Length: 93
Image (cartoon, rainbow, N blue to C red; front, side):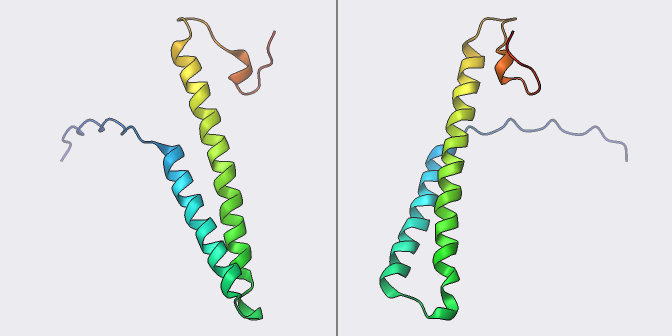
Protein backbone atom coordinates (compact mmCIF):
# COMPACT_ATOMS: atom_id res chain seq x y z
CA UNK A 1 0.00 0.00 0.00
CA UNK A 2 2.87 2.39 0.75
CA UNK A 3 4.86 1.67 -2.37
CA UNK A 4 7.47 4.22 -3.36
CA UNK A 5 6.31 6.61 -6.03
CA UNK A 6 8.03 6.31 -9.41
CA UNK A 7 10.19 9.29 -10.40
CA UNK A 8 8.60 12.09 -12.38
CA UNK A 9 9.33 12.02 -16.11
CA UNK A 10 11.69 14.64 -17.46
CA UNK A 11 9.94 17.62 -19.10
CA UNK A 12 9.72 17.61 -22.88
CA UNK A 13 11.49 20.29 -24.88
CA UNK A 14 8.88 22.13 -26.91
CA UNK A 15 8.87 25.01 -29.35
CA UNK A 16 6.23 27.20 -27.73
CA UNK A 17 6.72 30.13 -30.12
CA UNK A 18 5.97 27.93 -33.15
CA UNK A 19 2.81 26.62 -31.51
CA UNK A 20 1.64 30.14 -30.70
CA UNK A 21 2.36 31.36 -34.24
CA UNK A 22 0.37 28.44 -35.69
CA UNK A 23 -2.59 29.11 -33.39
CA UNK A 24 -2.53 32.83 -34.10
CA UNK A 25 -2.38 32.08 -37.82
CA UNK A 26 -5.53 29.97 -37.51
CA UNK A 27 -7.30 32.84 -35.75
CA UNK A 28 -6.22 35.17 -38.57
CA UNK A 29 -7.59 32.75 -41.18
CA UNK A 30 -10.89 32.50 -39.30
CA UNK A 31 -11.07 36.31 -39.07
CA UNK A 32 -10.47 36.75 -42.81
CA UNK A 33 -13.12 34.15 -43.64
CA UNK A 34 -15.63 35.87 -41.37
CA UNK A 35 -14.85 39.28 -42.81
CA UNK A 36 -15.46 37.92 -46.32
CA UNK A 37 -18.66 36.01 -45.48
CA UNK A 38 -20.10 38.65 -43.13
CA UNK A 39 -22.06 36.73 -40.50
CA UNK A 40 -25.59 37.82 -39.55
CA UNK A 41 -25.95 40.61 -36.96
CA UNK A 42 -26.68 37.99 -34.30
CA UNK A 43 -23.26 36.43 -34.91
CA UNK A 44 -21.04 39.53 -35.08
CA UNK A 45 -19.40 38.40 -31.85
CA UNK A 46 -17.61 35.71 -33.87
CA UNK A 47 -15.48 38.45 -35.46
CA UNK A 48 -14.56 39.87 -32.06
CA UNK A 49 -13.67 36.39 -30.81
CA UNK A 50 -11.17 36.09 -33.67
CA UNK A 51 -9.79 39.55 -32.93
CA UNK A 52 -9.32 38.55 -29.28
CA UNK A 53 -7.61 35.30 -30.37
CA UNK A 54 -5.18 37.22 -32.58
CA UNK A 55 -4.48 39.76 -29.83
CA UNK A 56 -3.86 37.09 -27.21
CA UNK A 57 -1.67 35.19 -29.66
CA UNK A 58 0.49 38.26 -30.25
CA UNK A 59 0.79 38.80 -26.50
CA UNK A 60 1.61 35.12 -25.95
CA UNK A 61 4.33 35.21 -28.61
CA UNK A 62 5.89 38.31 -27.03
CA UNK A 63 5.71 36.73 -23.56
CA UNK A 64 7.25 33.40 -24.60
CA UNK A 65 10.09 35.06 -26.55
CA UNK A 66 10.88 37.26 -23.53
CA UNK A 67 10.81 34.25 -21.20
CA UNK A 68 13.11 32.26 -23.51
CA UNK A 69 15.60 35.14 -23.76
CA UNK A 70 15.73 35.45 -19.97
CA UNK A 71 16.22 31.70 -19.57
CA UNK A 72 19.03 31.71 -22.14
CA UNK A 73 20.72 34.62 -20.36
CA UNK A 74 20.43 32.88 -17.00
CA UNK A 75 21.85 29.68 -18.50
CA UNK A 76 24.92 31.42 -19.90
CA UNK A 77 25.57 33.54 -16.79
CA UNK A 78 28.50 32.43 -14.64
CA UNK A 79 27.63 30.57 -11.44
CA UNK A 80 26.75 32.92 -8.61
CA UNK A 81 25.96 35.80 -10.96
CA UNK A 82 22.36 36.86 -10.93
CA UNK A 83 20.40 39.48 -12.79
CA UNK A 84 18.55 41.32 -10.01
CA UNK A 85 16.20 42.93 -12.55
CA UNK A 86 14.75 39.50 -13.38
CA UNK A 87 13.99 38.66 -9.75
CA UNK A 88 10.47 39.79 -8.80
CA UNK A 89 10.44 42.39 -6.05
CA UNK A 90 14.12 43.31 -6.41
CA UNK A 91 15.55 46.37 -8.03
CA UNK A 92 18.99 46.50 -9.62
CA UNK A 93 21.59 48.05 -7.33
